[in-house]
Image (tube, rainbow, N blue to C red; front, side, top):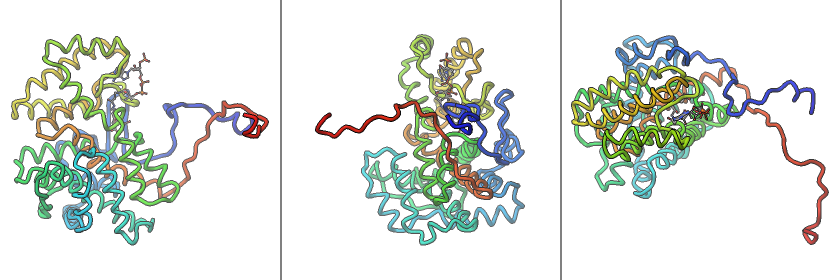
Length: 382
Ligand code: SDX
């Protein structure tokens, strides 16, 4: 083994490896702290908006009132799709998974951007604005298409949260639903070098384009160990007939060493601060919408998991109570992860913009464990 390799360490899953410096998200996994550029997540959820949060991540400071107004207008001007993109939305198979549809449509944006490969900061910011603004239309448009409903074109006078709910349901959402959606988008916006963000950085570090980086990230977020977990939580809740069956269901999972979706985290060994907020939130929304049985079932699962594995630092993560929240907001289960992507595209693009300021190709090593110096035998001898 070369001396260079001898100095390297093996860290499967990069559990204990730091690959870069960032000013975007601070996470203290032991204390359960999350800050976006120094602002704690609870303050942002209480007082900010998703547009302001996206601005904070992209510019690493909070905007003035006029800057936020101008930024929001830029986004609103980009809500609508070209006619060829709307045609693509309705050309997709109705039984396709919304995450496959989202990944395909986002990737297709590059086909109609003559500057798709311009990696200047200005061009990358423009592409980031375009994707953040258009992904709601992809998700809502595909959902209405697969249900045989007429498409609802964007309302370019309202926020991302309100516009998404309007395009999805075809009616003006209530203020409470708009605020609920806006807070969920804030809570999901960024989270350090999670798998999908890291995947986007591997792509952008080759100096590939921003559309390719976000397409990589969407594909990575989809996995049930990552962003797909919120859907997994809902499937789990639907499998449990009643609150009386929760104990046996959870104990069966744990006995079989199966993962209970929505619990555990690579970094948090304390309560995920986003889950703290979402739990309170989910209860209010569930009460308003007649879904308290679902919320109480979730609470029961949490009690049992706390009793059985809390000492191992396994607590609810962001996905556990977001499932009840999204279900209570009337979202179909397979739209939960696309909603995660709708928010996290702000974090993905923010990290890509930041990483490109001091780019370094990401290319780790592996320890070779295969054979050496084998003699090549002609196929006639094999
Ligand atoms: C997200 O990284 C991010 O920041 C992600 C995210 C973001 O904002 O981007 O926060 C969003 O992806 C949240 C996580 C969503 N995933 C899930 O809810 C899926 C269920 N969770 C697990 O698969 C797991 O907790 C992971 C994948 C999240 C983390 O896994 P690790 O760090 O690789 O830990 P591990 O799988 O090695 O588990 C360590 C121990 C094991 O016990 P032992 O075998 O050592 O005895 O903890 C146990 C595991 O069995 N464990 C669980 C569990 N999670 C871990 N046991 C039961 N249920 C679980 N959910």
